[in-house]
Length: 173
Ligand code: PRP
Image 1 (cartoon, rainbow, N blue to C red):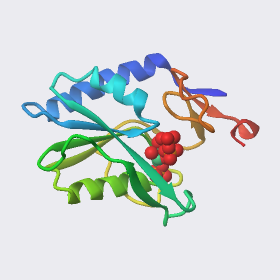
Image 2: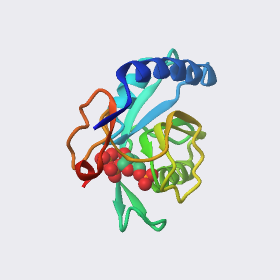
Image 3: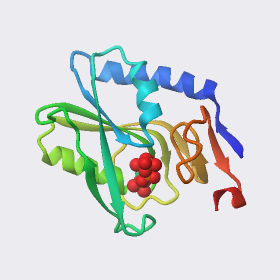
């Protein structure tokens, strides 16, 4: 495993990102929506860096078909519990890969009547991007690789690691 983002680097970046987001939402009370499961750690750390009031909720998305293809289809398997019509929504993702999940959620929540929908991702990973979804806030941009830790898993393991690592060839299989 190769260290990609250390705990110290993550902490410093989230402090700055939290300040930026708080400035942009000054006077508003956005609904922060984490996308399960991977975003649970990022949401927990990010909201503690915000100085505006927020409400927090979670959505779970199921993806169908070949995740590597641009035709990947999504459905919401656990909707938000807070009514989102008229609300400022900040979608929080651990990683954007093909872009299918975030593109689908952005469209779906806008269609559900949210006043605004912005996206905040921990890692913007562009190597397999097939939908040019708008990312309003990205903590980090990483070129590629099989990443684990800080919510990111390999077959459900390694989400608990406090830093982000890239798996080497045989580890990623
Ligand atoms: C991962 C990640 C994003 C999505 C990104 O979730 O957490 O939600 O894939 O990929 P995309 O940009 O290609 O749509 P995953 O389906 O692995 O579920 P998990 O969060 O429960 O690990």
